[in-house]
Structures are given as C-alpha cells and as structure tokens.
Amino acid sequence: MHQTDFLVREPLLDARQRVLGYELCWSAAAATPAEQELLLAFVAEQLVSPEGDWLLRDKALFLEAVPSMLSADALHQLPPQHTVLALKAPTLSHPDTMAAVQALRAGGVGILLRDADLLRIGNRLPTIASYVEVRFSGADVADQARNYAALRHAAVGMVARPVSSWADFDACALLGLNAFVGKLHLTPRPSNDQKGLNPAQTIIMQLMQMVRQNADVGQIEAVLKRDATLSYKLLRFINSAGFGAGREIQSLRQALALLGYAPLYRWLTLLLATASTTGYSPVLLETAVVRGRLAELLAQQALGKSEAEQVFVAGMFSLLDRLLGISMDEVLANIQLSEDVVTALRNRDGKYGPYLALAEACELNSNLVSSMAAALKLTPLDVNTAHLAALAWAQNVAA
Image (cartoon, rainbow, N blue to C red; front, side, top):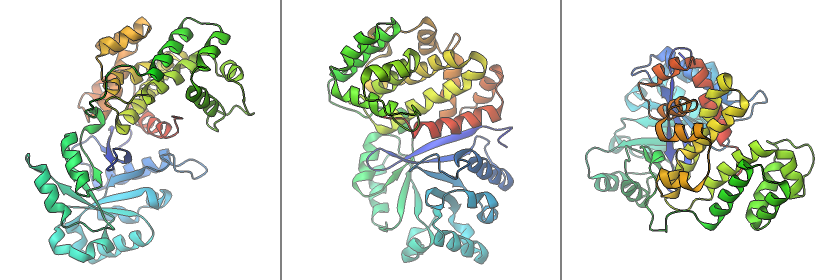
C-alpha cells in the first residue's frame, strides 16, 4: 500500500496547543485490514531507528486498527508507550478481541475507542481504553463538550473531533477534554498582540540579509553578539549531537566558520519562525517545520542538496505570514529572497513551487497528491518515506 497510496497525517493537540501525537492513515477512502496492517509495518520500519530509538521522541502515534491487527508482528516493533490503536467499540463484544485488547493494555499499548456508549461502559472504561473519541455535530460544541465532560474518567483521555475553531478548542480545554483533532494546525491563534516583527525577528532578518550578501564573518558575529539568546541558540545548535561537530565549539566565530553560509541561512529561517509571538501556536510552528523539510526532501533527488535547501526556506516561509500575523507581501518586503523562492511563495510555481504545493497537499488529504507527485516523477513510496522522515526530523529541531 505504501507503494501505491499516500499517507495522511492529522495532529492531535493537548490543552496547551502542543502536538501530543499524530494520527496516520492511507488516503484511500476505505483501507482493507491487510492494507491497515501494511501501514503498521511501514511506520515501524520508518520511525524506529536501527538502534531501536523512537524517532518521534515524545509524540504518540495513532493508527486505525481492526481486531486482526492486534497480534501483528510489526506492533511489537513500536514503543508501546507511544502507540495508540483506534478500535471501534462494537468490536470488543467478541471475547477474543477483548482479551487481545486487555493484553495490549497490560503491555502499555494505548487503545482509543470509537463509537463508544460511555454511559453503558461506565466505570469499565479505564480498564479497556486509554483514550475515547467523542464527536461533535453542528455548532453547539460547547454544550456537547459539557455533556461529554460529565462522563470523563481521570485515567482516560478524551479525543474531541472535529474542533474547527480556537473558540471551540478553548471551550473543550476548559471542560477538561485533553486531545483535539481539527484543522487548527493551519490556523493562527487569534491574538491582540501587536502584529509584525518583534526585536528578535528584526535582528534575525538583518542576519539573513547579511548572509545573502556574503557579509564578512566578523560583521555577522558582531550582530549576533547584540542578542545573547541568539548567540546561545547558535552555540547549542552547533554543539548538538544532531549536528555532529565532533568537538566543543565555544566561540561564535568558530560556529559560523564551521556551519557555513547556506546552513546558517536555513537555521536563521527556523529561528525566525520560533521567535514569533503574534498569532503563535506550537502546532502551527511544527507544521511549518514539517512542511519545509518535506518539500526539501521531495526536491533533493531532482534539484540537488543546495537547491533543495532553498525549497526548505520556501516551505518555512509559506506559513510565516500566519506565524507573524502579517500579509505575505509584508513578509517578502522585509527580506530579500531569491526569485525562485518568491515565485514559489506567490504562485506555487517555478522551479521550487511544485514541491511546496505537494508538501501542502500532503497535509490536507488532497486528491491532487497523486497527480502532483506523478508530475514530479515521484512515486508514492518516495513521498511516504519523505513524509515520515520530515515528521521525525521536526522533532529534533533546536528551538
């Protein structure tokens, strides 16, 4: 299935707007049990390192399941504390399924129940499930959330869907529901803060301009020294295990010389987004990072590493207007970008635009993903592998 269909991801948020996990499924409308089991195996292969490390770090993975999957070999390759299987409650009426669920729960695997009658299950719920899904219909989300909250159990998380506005999110969070699914990962949090660049972002923009103009390392170092936080973040990044400098770097000049201009520009792009406070939400930032990295990975084979880094910049900047609370025109007026990046941002056209458009389509379960990938000579396996790699990479970005 990973060779013929495309992955869809949907983030689940906690009450503090952070991503607690991702639900993954195939874009096909109705996957068979065999296809669902293939997804389980593919995810285990891509998101567990050869050393056995979980590449999504503290994030949970939510996967649709059927009873036949409960004993799949691939399930034992995933970390139980970060794995949640979503089952329809009526399937638990079969004794074998109930026994398998209880065995998985005893081993630490999470179970999310769908279509559950909470009144009927009552106090037995914590012994069966770690999450229960509650669904809203119509506009009276706050009233429905209040009814569900009255039935909640302290040991069982309530996954609410769909939660389509931040007002509904706040109503749910206030009532104790603790996981939310909707399209909020693409929606900036409303804010009364002054919009535009804050002082930290102004310095970052200045540094990006200097890098674009190949300014002297000493001049860049002098600007960095004006902001202790930026200097600290650069040294932390360069000394991180992920960068692999091989020795302790203690000076800004050493860090700049080791990093190089193109990677420095890419790092500043990330910092520009993380320095946002206007309309800020952690999930929007994580979406920007995943989008940028996915677009970059999709472009690497055709464009090469250097140009693919520019595709990353385009991917990150594509959500910068929402992160900063200003228009894209204002974003582009504040920073000099290459013509190819600007064309990608304005029209999703040119050399980089199609890769950005494909990365965006992967966020929306768009039926255009297949034709977009084919136009770029990318197979479903190419896109799916890059998708999970981008998701893993985003967990390790130094903020």
